[in-house]
Image (cartoon, rainbow, N blue to C red):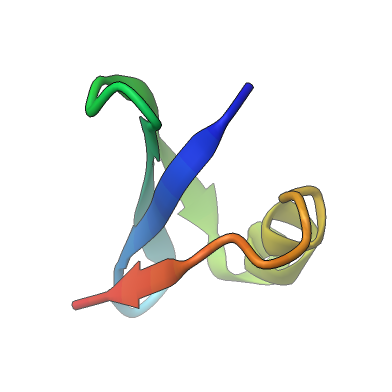
Length: 53
């Protein structure tokens, strides 16, 4: 999967994370608990842009 950007909506305990693919289509949109966020980010390809609100 070619990821254009990985977006994170910050909150207290759960973060909403979204993956926008190279075609501009949302390929994933889910909640991630604070304890799992770093693990989720580490699964991304190197040099994937991160956007946070």
